Image (cartoon, rainbow over all chains, first blue to last red; front, side, top):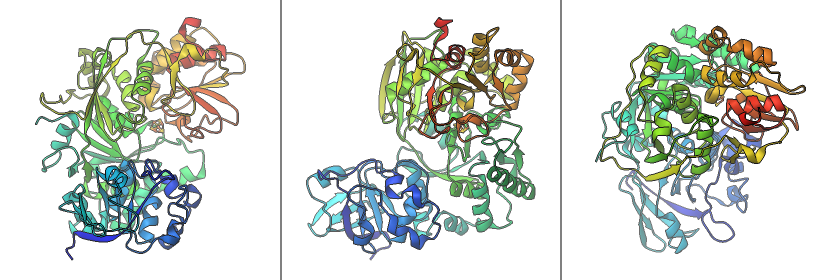
Length: 181
Length: 416
Ligand code: SF4
Protein backbone atom coordinates (compact mmCIF):
# COMPACT_ATOMS: atom_id res chain seq x y z
CA UNK A 1 0.00 0.00 0.00
CA UNK A 2 1.14 3.50 -0.79
CA UNK A 3 2.50 5.54 2.10
CA UNK A 4 -0.22 8.15 1.75
CA UNK A 5 -3.08 5.65 1.83
CA UNK A 6 -4.66 4.56 5.07
CA UNK A 7 -7.55 2.26 5.73
CA UNK A 8 -9.49 1.19 8.78
CA UNK A 9 -12.83 0.62 10.37
CA UNK A 10 -14.76 3.77 11.26
CA UNK A 11 -16.56 4.96 14.35
CA UNK A 12 -19.08 7.67 13.56
CA UNK A 13 -19.64 9.91 16.58
CA UNK A 14 -23.43 10.23 16.58
CA UNK A 15 -25.76 11.63 19.21
CA UNK A 16 -29.01 9.94 20.26
CA UNK A 17 -30.79 11.44 17.28
CA UNK A 18 -28.21 9.88 14.99
CA UNK A 19 -26.65 13.23 14.09
CA UNK A 20 -22.93 13.79 13.83
CA UNK A 21 -21.91 15.48 17.10
CA UNK A 22 -20.54 19.00 16.58
CA UNK A 23 -18.32 21.16 18.80
CA UNK A 24 -16.86 18.27 20.79
CA UNK A 25 -14.50 20.19 23.06
CA UNK A 26 -11.24 19.11 24.63
CA UNK A 27 -12.92 18.61 27.99
CA UNK A 28 -15.28 16.07 26.44
CA UNK A 29 -12.36 14.39 24.70
CA UNK A 30 -10.04 14.33 27.69
CA UNK A 31 -11.38 15.59 30.99
CA UNK A 32 -9.32 18.07 32.98
CA UNK A 33 -9.43 15.74 35.99
CA UNK A 34 -6.75 13.64 34.27
CA UNK A 35 -4.43 16.38 33.08
CA UNK A 36 -1.79 15.38 35.64
CA UNK A 37 -1.14 12.14 33.70
CA UNK A 38 2.03 12.37 31.64
CA UNK A 39 2.47 8.71 30.57
CA UNK A 40 1.08 8.23 27.06
CA UNK A 41 0.12 4.62 27.80
CA UNK A 42 -2.16 5.82 30.62
CA UNK A 43 -4.10 8.29 28.50
CA UNK A 44 -6.05 6.01 26.17
CA UNK A 45 -8.52 4.86 28.82
CA UNK A 46 -9.86 8.41 29.20
CA UNK A 47 -10.46 9.17 25.50
CA UNK A 48 -13.97 10.58 24.96
CA UNK A 49 -14.55 9.83 28.63
CA UNK A 50 -16.71 12.91 29.03
CA UNK A 51 -18.76 12.62 25.84
CA UNK A 52 -22.36 11.55 26.43
CA UNK A 53 -22.99 8.12 24.93
CA UNK A 54 -19.34 7.42 24.15
CA UNK A 55 -17.74 6.78 27.53
CA UNK A 56 -17.01 3.15 26.70
CA UNK A 57 -15.17 4.10 23.51
CA UNK A 58 -11.70 3.02 24.72
CA UNK A 59 -13.01 -0.50 25.41
CA UNK A 60 -14.75 -0.84 22.06
CA UNK A 61 -12.13 0.59 19.76
CA UNK A 62 -9.39 -1.39 18.02
CA UNK A 63 -5.93 -0.40 16.95
CA UNK A 64 -6.02 1.30 13.56
CA UNK A 65 -9.68 2.36 13.75
CA UNK A 66 -10.76 5.73 12.35
CA UNK A 67 -12.84 8.37 14.12
CA UNK A 68 -15.47 10.37 12.22
CA UNK A 69 -16.66 13.50 14.03
CA UNK A 70 -18.73 16.64 13.46
CA UNK A 71 -17.74 20.24 12.82
CA UNK A 72 -15.24 22.03 15.13
CA UNK A 73 -13.79 18.87 16.68
CA UNK A 74 -11.38 19.68 19.51
CA UNK A 75 -12.67 23.17 20.26
CA UNK A 76 -11.52 24.71 23.52
CA UNK A 77 -8.32 24.43 25.48
CA UNK A 78 -4.81 23.73 24.24
CA UNK A 79 -4.30 20.46 26.13
CA UNK A 80 -2.10 18.07 24.16
CA UNK A 81 -3.63 15.06 25.96
CA UNK A 82 -6.77 15.48 23.85
CA UNK A 83 -4.66 14.39 20.87
CA UNK A 84 -2.33 12.02 22.73
CA UNK A 85 -5.18 9.91 24.13
CA UNK A 86 -5.98 8.85 20.54
CA UNK A 87 -2.33 8.20 19.79
CA UNK A 88 -2.30 5.96 22.86
CA UNK A 89 -5.24 3.95 21.46
CA UNK A 90 -3.45 3.79 18.11
CA UNK A 91 -6.34 5.49 16.30
CA UNK A 92 -5.35 5.77 12.64
CA UNK A 93 -7.04 9.02 11.70
CA UNK A 94 -9.65 11.57 12.70
CA UNK A 95 -11.96 12.81 9.97
CA UNK A 96 -14.15 15.89 10.56
CA UNK A 97 -15.57 18.82 8.56
CA UNK A 98 -13.40 21.17 10.66
CA UNK A 99 -11.23 21.23 13.77
CA UNK A 100 -10.51 23.67 16.59
CA UNK A 101 -7.47 25.73 15.51
CA UNK A 102 -5.21 24.76 18.41
CA UNK A 103 -6.34 21.13 18.30
CA UNK A 104 -5.43 20.96 14.63
CA UNK A 105 -1.96 22.43 15.32
CA UNK A 106 -1.38 20.03 18.22
CA UNK A 107 -2.36 17.03 16.09
CA UNK A 108 -0.16 18.04 13.16
CA UNK A 109 2.77 18.87 15.44
CA UNK A 110 2.64 15.49 17.13
CA UNK A 111 2.40 13.64 13.81
CA UNK A 112 -1.17 12.50 14.30
CA UNK A 113 -3.26 12.32 11.09
CA UNK A 114 -6.29 14.63 10.92
CA UNK A 115 -8.22 15.24 7.71
CA UNK A 116 -11.03 17.57 6.78
CA UNK A 117 -14.05 16.40 4.85
CA UNK A 118 -16.61 19.07 4.01
CA UNK A 119 -19.20 16.56 2.83
CA UNK A 120 -19.14 14.54 6.03
CA UNK A 121 -22.52 15.71 7.37
CA UNK A 122 -24.21 14.79 4.14
CA UNK A 123 -22.41 11.45 3.84
CA UNK A 124 -23.39 10.52 7.37
CA UNK A 125 -26.98 11.77 6.97
CA UNK A 126 -27.55 9.55 3.96
CA UNK A 127 -25.81 6.68 5.71
CA UNK A 128 -23.08 6.48 3.11
CA UNK A 129 -20.67 6.21 6.05
CA UNK A 130 -21.67 4.14 9.07
CA UNK A 131 -19.92 2.81 12.11
CA UNK A 132 -18.23 -0.46 11.30
CA UNK A 133 -17.62 0.35 7.62
CA UNK A 134 -14.12 -0.08 6.36
CA UNK A 135 -12.86 2.97 4.54
CA UNK A 136 -9.71 3.93 2.70
CA UNK A 137 -8.41 7.48 2.21
CA UNK A 138 -5.53 8.90 0.27
CA UNK A 139 -4.04 11.81 2.24
CA UNK A 140 -2.52 13.43 -0.82
CA UNK A 141 -5.05 12.94 -3.58
CA UNK A 142 -8.06 13.41 -1.29
CA UNK A 143 -9.78 10.29 -2.57
CA UNK A 144 -11.92 8.47 -0.05
CA UNK A 145 -13.64 5.11 -0.52
CA UNK A 146 -16.09 3.28 1.69
CA UNK A 147 -14.94 -0.25 0.91
CA UNK A 148 -17.88 -1.89 2.70
CA UNK A 149 -20.44 -0.05 0.58
CA UNK A 150 -18.31 0.75 -2.45
CA UNK A 151 -19.08 4.47 -2.25
CA UNK A 152 -16.38 6.99 -3.04
CA UNK A 153 -16.12 10.44 -1.47
CA UNK A 154 -13.74 13.37 -1.31
CA UNK A 155 -11.62 14.65 1.55
CA UNK A 156 -9.46 17.77 1.54
CA UNK A 157 -5.97 16.59 0.52
CA UNK A 158 -3.35 17.06 3.20
CA UNK A 159 -1.05 19.98 2.48
CA UNK A 160 2.57 19.18 1.75
CA UNK A 161 3.56 20.72 5.08
CA UNK A 162 1.18 18.60 7.14
CA UNK A 163 2.13 15.47 5.20
CA UNK A 164 5.86 16.06 5.68
CA UNK A 165 5.44 16.56 9.44
CA UNK A 166 3.28 13.45 9.61
CA UNK A 167 5.86 11.34 7.79
CA UNK A 168 8.58 12.60 10.11
CA UNK A 169 6.36 11.65 13.08
CA UNK A 170 6.16 15.14 14.50
CA UNK A 171 7.32 18.72 14.26
CA UNK A 172 10.57 18.36 16.21
CA UNK A 173 11.66 15.32 14.17
CA UNK A 174 10.72 17.10 10.99
CA UNK A 175 12.83 20.07 12.03
CA UNK A 176 15.78 17.78 12.67
CA UNK A 177 15.53 16.50 9.12
CA UNK A 178 15.86 20.11 8.02
CA UNK A 179 18.95 20.41 10.16
CA UNK A 180 17.54 21.97 13.33
CA UNK A 181 19.56 19.86 15.73
CA UNK B 1 -7.38 36.81 -7.52
CA UNK B 2 -6.29 39.60 -5.18
CA UNK B 3 -5.09 39.11 -1.64
CA UNK B 4 -6.66 40.13 1.65
CA UNK B 5 -4.55 41.79 4.34
CA UNK B 6 -3.56 38.59 6.11
CA UNK B 7 -2.75 36.91 2.80
CA UNK B 8 -0.49 39.81 1.83
CA UNK B 9 1.38 39.81 5.13
CA UNK B 10 1.95 36.07 5.05
CA UNK B 11 2.88 36.18 1.36
CA UNK B 12 5.69 38.51 2.38
CA UNK B 13 7.02 35.80 4.67
CA UNK B 14 6.84 32.67 2.55
CA UNK B 15 7.99 31.43 -0.84
CA UNK B 16 4.85 29.37 -1.32
CA UNK B 17 1.76 30.74 -3.03
CA UNK B 18 -0.64 31.88 -0.32
CA UNK B 19 -4.32 31.03 -0.58
CA UNK B 20 -7.02 30.30 1.99
CA UNK B 21 -7.05 26.76 3.36
CA UNK B 22 -3.46 26.09 2.40
CA UNK B 23 -0.77 25.42 4.99
CA UNK B 24 2.52 27.20 4.34
CA UNK B 25 5.83 27.61 6.10
CA UNK B 26 6.32 31.22 7.07
CA UNK B 27 9.19 33.24 8.51
CA UNK B 28 8.67 34.85 11.88
CA UNK B 29 10.06 38.30 12.61
CA UNK B 30 9.61 37.99 16.37
CA UNK B 31 9.20 34.90 18.53
CA UNK B 32 8.40 35.35 22.18
CA UNK B 33 7.33 33.54 25.32
CA UNK B 34 5.85 34.84 28.55
CA UNK B 35 5.98 33.60 32.12
CA UNK B 36 3.02 31.35 31.32
CA UNK B 37 4.08 28.78 28.72
CA UNK B 38 7.66 30.05 28.74
CA UNK B 39 9.03 27.36 31.10
CA UNK B 40 7.56 24.63 28.88
CA UNK B 41 9.09 26.29 25.85
CA UNK B 42 12.44 26.05 27.63
CA UNK B 43 11.79 22.43 28.63
CA UNK B 44 10.90 21.44 25.06
CA UNK B 45 13.81 23.40 23.67
CA UNK B 46 16.41 21.88 25.96
CA UNK B 47 15.07 18.36 25.49
CA UNK B 48 15.11 18.65 21.69
CA UNK B 49 18.04 20.95 21.03
CA UNK B 50 20.18 20.95 24.17
CA UNK B 51 22.58 23.89 24.18
CA UNK B 52 22.20 24.77 20.51
CA UNK B 53 21.67 28.50 20.05
CA UNK B 54 18.26 29.84 19.02
CA UNK B 55 17.94 30.80 15.36
CA UNK B 56 18.34 34.51 16.04
CA UNK B 57 18.61 35.93 19.53
CA UNK B 58 17.81 39.42 18.25
CA UNK B 59 14.39 38.16 17.21
CA UNK B 60 13.69 36.13 20.33
CA UNK B 61 12.27 37.57 23.57
CA UNK B 62 10.77 36.71 26.91
CA UNK B 63 8.03 38.98 28.19
CA UNK B 64 6.93 38.50 31.79
CA UNK B 65 3.47 39.90 32.39
CA UNK B 66 1.12 37.44 34.02
CA UNK B 67 2.28 37.37 37.60
CA UNK B 68 4.69 40.24 38.07
CA UNK B 69 6.55 40.43 40.38
CA UNK B 70 5.60 36.84 41.21
CA UNK B 71 3.18 36.26 44.06
CA UNK B 72 3.44 32.48 43.96
CA UNK B 73 6.43 30.16 44.07
CA UNK B 74 5.28 28.54 40.86
CA UNK B 75 5.62 31.81 38.95
CA UNK B 76 8.87 32.71 40.69
CA UNK B 77 10.29 29.39 39.52
CA UNK B 78 8.81 29.76 36.05
CA UNK B 79 10.36 33.17 35.57
CA UNK B 80 13.71 32.00 36.84
CA UNK B 81 13.70 29.02 34.43
CA UNK B 82 13.17 31.47 31.56
CA UNK B 83 15.79 33.94 32.85
CA UNK B 84 18.47 31.25 33.15
CA UNK B 85 17.79 30.04 29.64
CA UNK B 86 17.76 33.63 28.36
CA UNK B 87 21.14 34.38 29.98
CA UNK B 88 22.71 31.27 28.48
CA UNK B 89 21.28 32.08 25.07
CA UNK B 90 21.80 35.82 25.17
CA UNK B 91 18.07 36.50 24.77
CA UNK B 92 16.54 39.74 26.03
CA UNK B 93 14.00 39.47 28.83
CA UNK B 94 11.35 42.13 29.32
CA UNK B 95 11.23 41.39 33.01
CA UNK B 96 8.62 41.82 35.75
CA UNK B 97 8.89 45.61 35.60
CA UNK B 98 7.88 46.03 31.94
CA UNK B 99 4.21 45.21 31.57
CA UNK B 100 2.03 43.31 29.10
CA UNK B 101 4.18 41.60 26.48
CA UNK B 102 2.11 42.39 23.39
CA UNK B 103 2.02 46.10 24.32
CA UNK B 104 5.73 46.16 25.08
CA UNK B 105 6.44 44.68 21.64
CA UNK B 106 4.48 47.55 20.07
CA UNK B 107 6.18 50.23 22.18
CA UNK B 108 9.61 48.82 21.43
CA UNK B 109 8.90 48.98 17.70
CA UNK B 110 9.31 45.21 17.44
CA UNK B 111 5.74 44.48 16.38
CA UNK B 112 5.40 46.61 13.27
CA UNK B 113 2.87 46.75 10.47
CA UNK B 114 3.46 43.95 7.99
CA UNK B 115 5.59 41.84 10.35
CA UNK B 116 4.89 38.41 11.86
CA UNK B 117 5.03 37.82 15.62
CA UNK B 118 4.24 34.76 17.75
CA UNK B 119 4.12 34.20 21.49
CA UNK B 120 2.56 32.02 24.18
CA UNK B 121 -0.30 34.46 24.67
CA UNK B 122 -3.77 33.81 23.28
CA UNK B 123 -4.27 37.56 22.77
CA UNK B 124 -1.16 38.00 20.62
CA UNK B 125 -3.55 38.72 17.74
CA UNK B 126 -4.12 42.10 19.42
CA UNK B 127 -1.18 43.14 17.23
CA UNK B 128 -3.63 43.31 14.33
CA UNK B 129 -4.28 46.79 15.77
CA UNK B 130 -0.97 47.96 14.29
CA UNK B 131 -1.27 45.87 11.11
CA UNK B 132 1.04 43.16 12.41
CA UNK B 133 0.23 39.47 12.09
CA UNK B 134 0.38 38.34 15.73
CA UNK B 135 -0.56 34.87 16.84
CA UNK B 136 -0.63 32.98 20.11
CA UNK B 137 0.69 29.44 20.04
CA UNK B 138 1.49 26.49 22.29
CA UNK B 139 4.83 25.64 23.85
CA UNK B 140 5.80 23.05 21.20
CA UNK B 141 5.20 25.57 18.42
CA UNK B 142 7.13 28.31 20.17
CA UNK B 143 10.10 26.07 21.05
CA UNK B 144 10.27 25.11 17.38
CA UNK B 145 9.99 28.78 16.38
CA UNK B 146 12.85 29.74 18.73
CA UNK B 147 15.08 27.18 17.01
CA UNK B 148 13.97 27.53 13.40
CA UNK B 149 12.58 31.06 13.11
CA UNK B 150 9.63 29.57 11.26
CA UNK B 151 6.22 28.16 11.79
CA UNK B 152 3.61 26.50 9.63
CA UNK B 153 0.31 28.24 9.31
CA UNK B 154 -3.00 27.45 7.70
CA UNK B 155 -4.13 30.52 5.77
CA UNK B 156 -7.57 31.42 7.08
CA UNK B 157 -10.40 32.78 4.99
CA UNK B 158 -11.19 36.45 5.59
CA UNK B 159 -14.50 38.01 6.59
CA UNK B 160 -15.19 41.65 5.76
CA UNK B 161 -17.18 43.63 8.29
CA UNK B 162 -18.46 47.08 7.37
CA UNK B 163 -19.57 49.28 10.24
CA UNK B 164 -22.16 51.86 9.26
CA UNK B 165 -22.47 55.05 11.22
CA UNK B 166 -20.30 56.66 13.85
CA UNK B 167 -20.38 56.96 17.60
CA UNK B 168 -19.58 59.61 20.18
CA UNK B 169 -19.33 60.09 23.93
CA UNK B 170 -20.56 58.64 26.22
CA UNK B 171 -19.88 55.58 24.03
CA UNK B 172 -16.20 54.57 23.78
CA UNK B 173 -14.08 52.15 21.76
CA UNK B 174 -14.86 49.45 24.33
CA UNK B 175 -18.59 49.90 23.87
CA UNK B 176 -18.13 49.59 20.12
CA UNK B 177 -16.07 46.42 20.69
CA UNK B 178 -18.65 44.81 22.97
CA UNK B 179 -21.45 45.74 20.59
CA UNK B 180 -19.68 44.17 17.61
CA UNK B 181 -18.95 41.08 19.69
CA UNK B 182 -22.65 40.87 20.48
CA UNK B 183 -23.55 41.17 16.80
CA UNK B 184 -20.92 38.78 15.45
CA UNK B 185 -21.04 36.27 18.30
CA UNK B 186 -18.50 33.49 18.39
CA UNK B 187 -19.45 31.77 15.12
CA UNK B 188 -19.30 34.35 12.31
CA UNK B 189 -15.58 35.01 12.66
CA UNK B 190 -14.55 31.59 13.99
CA UNK B 191 -11.17 30.50 12.60
CA UNK B 192 -11.19 33.43 10.18
CA UNK B 193 -9.32 36.68 9.78
CA UNK B 194 -11.54 39.76 9.91
CA UNK B 195 -11.12 43.10 8.16
CA UNK B 196 -13.13 45.92 9.72
CA UNK B 197 -14.09 48.96 7.66
CA UNK B 198 -16.12 52.12 8.27
CA UNK B 199 -15.66 55.58 9.77
CA UNK B 200 -16.15 54.31 13.33
CA UNK B 201 -13.07 52.11 13.25
CA UNK B 202 -11.03 54.16 10.81
CA UNK B 203 -10.97 57.06 13.26
CA UNK B 204 -10.03 55.06 16.34
CA UNK B 205 -6.89 56.11 18.17
CA UNK B 206 -4.12 53.57 18.72
CA UNK B 207 -5.51 52.77 22.13
CA UNK B 208 -9.02 52.33 20.69
CA UNK B 209 -7.71 50.04 17.96
CA UNK B 210 -5.94 47.94 20.55
CA UNK B 211 -9.17 47.63 22.55
CA UNK B 212 -11.07 46.70 19.43
CA UNK B 213 -8.62 44.16 18.02
CA UNK B 214 -7.96 42.53 21.39
CA UNK B 215 -11.45 41.06 21.46
CA UNK B 216 -11.27 39.32 18.10
CA UNK B 217 -10.00 36.45 20.27
CA UNK B 218 -13.40 36.42 22.01
CA UNK B 219 -15.07 36.33 18.58
CA UNK B 220 -13.04 33.11 18.04
CA UNK B 221 -11.32 34.83 15.11
CA UNK B 222 -7.70 34.32 14.06
CA UNK B 223 -6.97 38.05 13.88
CA UNK B 224 -8.67 41.38 13.12
CA UNK B 225 -7.31 44.23 11.01
CA UNK B 226 -8.46 47.81 10.50
CA UNK B 227 -6.75 48.59 7.18
CA UNK B 228 -7.91 52.22 6.92
CA UNK B 229 -6.63 54.81 9.34
CA UNK B 230 -6.86 58.50 10.08
CA UNK B 231 -3.94 60.95 9.88
CA UNK B 232 -3.26 61.09 13.59
CA UNK B 233 -2.53 57.37 13.88
CA UNK B 234 0.78 57.73 12.06
CA UNK B 235 2.13 60.28 14.50
CA UNK B 236 0.73 58.37 17.47
CA UNK B 237 2.63 55.25 16.43
CA UNK B 238 5.73 57.25 15.61
CA UNK B 239 5.63 58.85 19.08
CA UNK B 240 5.18 55.64 20.93
CA UNK B 241 7.52 53.32 19.05
CA UNK B 242 9.66 55.54 16.88
CA UNK B 243 8.66 53.76 13.70
CA UNK B 244 6.87 54.76 10.55
CA UNK B 245 3.41 53.33 10.13
CA UNK B 246 1.72 52.13 7.02
CA UNK B 247 -0.95 49.42 6.87
CA UNK B 248 -1.31 46.77 4.16
CA UNK B 249 -4.48 47.25 2.16
CA UNK B 250 -6.51 44.40 0.73
CA UNK B 251 -6.29 44.14 -3.04
CA UNK B 252 -9.32 45.27 -5.02
CA UNK B 253 -10.41 41.87 -6.28
CA UNK B 254 -9.67 39.95 -3.09
CA UNK B 255 -12.35 37.50 -2.10
CA UNK B 256 -14.06 37.17 1.26
CA UNK B 257 -15.72 34.19 2.90
CA UNK B 258 -18.47 36.49 4.08
CA UNK B 259 -19.35 40.19 4.08
CA UNK B 260 -21.30 41.60 7.00
CA UNK B 261 -22.74 45.05 7.62
CA UNK B 262 -23.42 46.28 11.12
CA UNK B 263 -25.18 49.54 11.85
CA UNK B 264 -23.70 51.13 14.94
CA UNK B 265 -25.47 54.48 14.91
CA UNK B 266 -26.95 55.39 18.27
CA UNK B 267 -24.35 53.26 20.07
CA UNK B 268 -24.74 53.51 23.85
CA UNK B 269 -22.46 52.11 26.59
CA UNK B 270 -22.44 48.31 26.67
CA UNK B 271 -21.86 45.72 29.37
CA UNK B 272 -21.08 41.99 28.98
CA UNK B 273 -22.91 39.92 31.58
CA UNK B 274 -21.25 36.89 33.25
CA UNK B 275 -20.18 34.36 32.18
CA UNK B 276 -19.66 35.07 28.51
CA UNK B 277 -18.04 38.06 26.76
CA UNK B 278 -20.66 38.05 23.99
CA UNK B 279 -23.58 38.17 26.43
CA UNK B 280 -23.82 41.93 25.88
CA UNK B 281 -26.57 44.37 26.90
CA UNK B 282 -27.08 48.13 26.95
CA UNK B 283 -25.90 49.58 30.25
CA UNK B 284 -29.41 50.88 30.91
CA UNK B 285 -30.71 47.32 31.18
CA UNK B 286 -28.28 46.61 34.01
CA UNK B 287 -28.49 49.81 36.01
CA UNK B 288 -28.71 49.10 39.71
CA UNK B 289 -26.85 45.78 39.69
CA UNK B 290 -24.72 45.98 42.85
CA UNK B 291 -20.98 45.64 42.52
CA UNK B 292 -18.27 45.09 45.10
CA UNK B 293 -15.19 45.93 43.11
CA UNK B 294 -13.89 47.33 39.83
CA UNK B 295 -10.86 46.62 37.68
CA UNK B 296 -9.41 48.94 35.04
CA UNK B 297 -6.54 47.59 32.98
CA UNK B 298 -5.58 44.50 30.88
CA UNK B 299 -4.34 44.38 27.30
CA UNK B 300 -7.81 45.55 26.27
CA UNK B 301 -8.08 48.77 28.32
CA UNK B 302 -4.78 49.42 30.08
CA UNK B 303 -3.40 52.33 28.06
CA UNK B 304 -2.98 55.94 29.14
CA UNK B 305 -6.07 57.04 27.22
CA UNK B 306 -8.16 54.40 29.02
CA UNK B 307 -6.92 55.42 32.44
CA UNK B 308 -7.46 59.08 31.56
CA UNK B 309 -11.10 58.34 30.70
CA UNK B 310 -11.54 56.77 34.12
CA UNK B 311 -9.70 59.59 35.88
CA UNK B 312 -11.98 62.16 34.27
CA UNK B 313 -14.98 60.43 35.87
CA UNK B 314 -13.29 59.97 39.25
CA UNK B 315 -11.57 63.37 39.50
CA UNK B 316 -12.45 65.13 42.73
CA UNK B 317 -14.82 62.34 43.80
CA UNK B 318 -14.57 59.35 46.11
CA UNK B 319 -15.23 55.72 45.33
CA UNK B 320 -18.25 54.57 47.29
CA UNK B 321 -17.56 53.32 50.79
CA UNK B 322 -17.25 49.53 50.76
CA UNK B 323 -16.33 49.38 47.07
CA UNK B 324 -12.76 48.93 45.80
CA UNK B 325 -11.24 49.85 42.46
CA UNK B 326 -8.05 48.29 41.13
CA UNK B 327 -6.17 50.06 38.37
CA UNK B 328 -3.30 48.43 36.48
CA UNK B 329 -1.44 50.24 33.69
CA UNK B 330 -0.57 48.02 30.72
CA UNK B 331 3.12 48.96 30.61
CA UNK B 332 5.84 50.90 32.36
CA UNK B 333 5.55 53.59 29.73
CA UNK B 334 1.85 54.00 30.51
CA UNK B 335 2.73 54.19 34.20
CA UNK B 336 5.16 57.01 33.46
CA UNK B 337 2.57 58.86 31.41
CA UNK B 338 -0.16 58.67 34.04
CA UNK B 339 2.36 59.83 36.61
CA UNK B 340 3.43 62.82 34.54
CA UNK B 341 -0.07 63.80 33.44
CA UNK B 342 -1.52 63.79 36.93
CA UNK B 343 -3.84 60.89 36.10
CA UNK B 344 -2.25 58.75 38.78
CA UNK B 345 -2.98 61.43 41.37
CA UNK B 346 -6.65 61.67 40.38
CA UNK B 347 -6.99 57.91 40.60
CA UNK B 348 -5.20 57.74 43.92
CA UNK B 349 -7.22 60.53 45.50
CA UNK B 350 -10.48 58.90 44.45
CA UNK B 351 -9.46 55.85 46.48
CA UNK B 352 -8.28 53.51 43.69
CA UNK B 353 -5.50 50.97 44.26
CA UNK B 354 -2.95 51.53 41.50
CA UNK B 355 -0.43 48.75 40.97
CA UNK B 356 2.63 48.22 38.82
CA UNK B 357 2.06 47.29 35.14
CA UNK B 358 1.09 43.81 33.97
CA UNK B 359 -1.91 41.58 33.25
CA UNK B 360 -2.85 41.47 36.88
CA UNK B 361 -6.55 40.95 37.57
CA UNK B 362 -7.24 39.79 34.02
CA UNK B 363 -6.26 36.18 34.70
CA UNK B 364 -4.89 34.49 37.77
CA UNK B 365 -2.43 37.34 38.09
CA UNK B 366 -0.88 38.82 41.17
CA UNK B 367 -3.68 41.16 42.11
CA UNK B 368 -7.43 41.34 42.11
CA UNK B 369 -8.95 37.87 42.28
CA UNK B 370 -12.61 37.77 43.32
CA UNK B 371 -13.98 35.69 46.18
CA UNK B 372 -17.13 33.60 46.30
CA UNK B 373 -20.16 35.83 45.68
CA UNK B 374 -18.10 38.95 44.92
CA UNK B 375 -19.32 41.00 41.97
CA UNK B 376 -16.74 42.74 39.81
CA UNK B 377 -17.00 45.14 36.90
CA UNK B 378 -13.90 44.99 34.74
CA UNK B 379 -12.43 46.48 31.57
CA UNK B 380 -10.88 43.09 30.73
CA UNK B 381 -11.81 40.90 27.80
CA UNK B 382 -13.03 37.69 29.40
CA UNK B 383 -15.59 36.97 32.08
CA UNK B 384 -15.70 33.18 32.02
CA UNK B 385 -16.56 31.44 35.28
CA UNK B 386 -13.47 31.10 37.45
CA UNK B 387 -11.22 33.22 35.24
CA UNK B 388 -10.59 35.90 37.88
CA UNK B 389 -11.63 33.95 40.92
CA UNK B 390 -14.92 32.63 42.27
CA UNK B 391 -16.93 35.83 41.81
CA UNK B 392 -18.91 37.14 38.85
CA UNK B 393 -17.38 39.58 36.40
CA UNK B 394 -19.16 42.09 34.16
CA UNK B 395 -17.17 43.62 31.30
CA UNK B 396 -17.42 47.31 30.43
CA UNK B 397 -15.50 50.45 29.42
CA UNK B 398 -13.22 52.39 31.78
CA UNK B 399 -15.95 55.06 31.95
CA UNK B 400 -18.66 52.63 33.06
CA UNK B 401 -16.32 50.87 35.51
CA UNK B 402 -15.30 54.19 37.09
CA UNK B 403 -18.89 55.46 37.31
CA UNK B 404 -20.05 52.15 38.77
CA UNK B 405 -17.40 52.35 41.48
CA UNK B 406 -18.65 55.79 42.52
CA UNK B 407 -22.20 54.48 42.99
CA UNK B 408 -21.57 50.88 44.04
CA UNK B 409 -23.84 49.64 41.27
CA UNK B 410 -23.64 49.49 37.47
CA UNK B 411 -23.88 53.09 36.30
CA UNK B 412 -22.88 55.27 33.39
CA UNK B 413 -21.58 58.78 32.86
CA UNK B 414 -25.11 60.19 32.66
CA UNK B 415 -25.71 59.22 36.28
CA UNK B 416 -23.04 61.61 37.52
S1 SF4 C 1 -4.25 41.17 30.04
FE1 SF4 C 1 -5.29 39.21 30.13
S2 SF4 C 1 -5.89 38.70 28.05
FE2 SF4 C 1 -4.36 40.34 27.98
S3 SF4 C 1 -2.41 39.29 27.71
FE3 SF4 C 1 -2.71 39.59 29.90
S4 SF4 C 1 -3.71 37.73 30.63
FE4 SF4 C 1 -3.90 37.75 28.40
